[in-house]
Length: 460
Image (cartoon, rainbow, N blue to C red):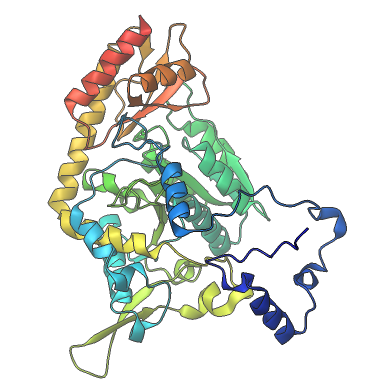
């Protein structure tokens, strides 16, 4: 039998035997296995990975990938009422035009002299967000809103020297899982159940949760996971400060054209996800997290992420844009950093900056009013469907809102039947008879009427 020739990958140069040998010789290793010698034998996989057969040509690879992509169904193909943290919004064409420019799209890292305006673009983003949030300091985006929330709570713990963290409003179970994992070393996370009938914060239970002191932060969301604008948000801030805790509030930044920013009702740290600000839905993304505070030295020192500032140069009238207090970041002090940020979602920050520039105060107000109106209309239409109950009908919701099935149907069955009819929605909640729906500015009244009529047909 002829000797089997080693497979040489067309895209991986070091798969060529002579190249591999020269690399091993250069570092004095006999085999790639030498690199893994320290890994205990008991935890090593002793069989080949279950990988597909290698594709030998670019044409084959293209056909394979296109076949995989064709199996996806996007919100452009179906009518979607999914939300719960990743939202379908209109993205103006100019946003894509700007972020797809090579000086932004391919600029992974670098310094001001080589970044072709990237630092300035991110400074502009921070400035626009600070105006929207009515804060002084906003970070360069971290991975997503989940990380921003967890990092904001860790910042509060470091700033206060305390370790207890209390959650007061309804929160996405996936976000809670991420936060719990992120703050677990050395912190206690206490989740106060909300009123099951309304989804509102239980103020008495929150006060009880803060008894005994030692609370670094009280966390609330506006809107909450179920889209509720809790009327007790200002009271929660007062309760937090009375217990000498910091008040951390997560918010949807797109709502701030019509709703007061968290800083207006006592938030010390505001956080969230900028996905609604001109960033396309993409397989559950794209996401980027923001953190904002007043210009308080103790709080600014706890930001693990990059901050860009404006400084005068030797040339009168010209300015530069660069890192503020770079020495506090993990980029500068590596393993000694308070947290590791690594690759940020800075490109999404530039997209959000372009979006905010285009919208302006009036545009943000109009889109906020549209979403509030659509949400109220959708809640009213679905409340009229037999077998559906909309909790707390007088409450104000933004984009997301829950329904409860009162008949024999389950949430899973309703979702399946909606999908059969070309509609995505809603997101299952912990209660097997509850679903979370979402409407934004892209939904028309005709879309909402279709959802209500379809649900009525399913319920019959």
